[in-house]
Image (cartoon, rainbow, N blue to C red; front, side):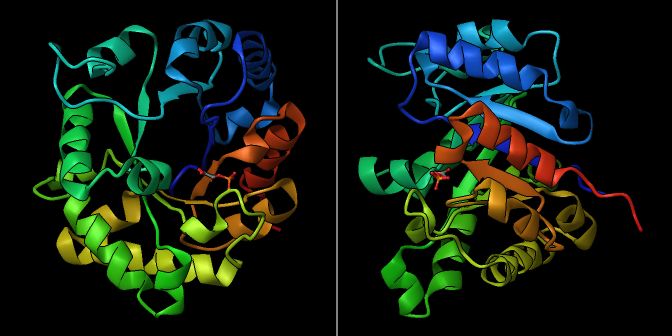
Length: 255
Ligand code: PGA
């Protein structure tokens, strides 16, 4: 049984007081008993947000990291620094880092290895551009990101990894993948995990969906068998909408 994970990717948004207020309100949301909740603020507010959620079940993550442990890497942040300010997760390979900043799979792979070595949980993002979907290349693209990002990562480590399928055309556009479109790719990703590792590993890895997740589509997406949670951008910036998504993702008692 995979426990749902709802992650808020706050990107380059919010100031200190808004980030702390949002984190504080999420720390009191009741569904956190049934759902893992993660917030990923800007690095400069990690410390303040960690303090705001301390003692609650809300986890804190970063939106990126560098793979070297320390040294002359101006502007970068290490895994130790993230641990030091209370992070337990790191988003890696987000489409904005792949497509806007230009990060290749080899770099993402080095970062995942550093994150795992530091005992943090990577959230690896994969997803196709609109033109790639329209050309029927979705699984080709996602498979190549999967293979490249997870190169030489063993079974024990992949079991500690979270994967997020985020079709780029659905991010910040208000266009959500339909539950069926998302489920299809999630099932294929799980098949890739089974082929590369084994079925037991494939069944244990959480695969999140991301791309315009909102309170009114979260339950339908989460009802798909291979969707284990959500990576939420815009709708994670407001306490009410993020709390509603968490609520909609709580496992429903069997009727
Ligand atoms: P969105 O962003 O929910 O605003 O579409 C999702 C993401 O980029 O992780």
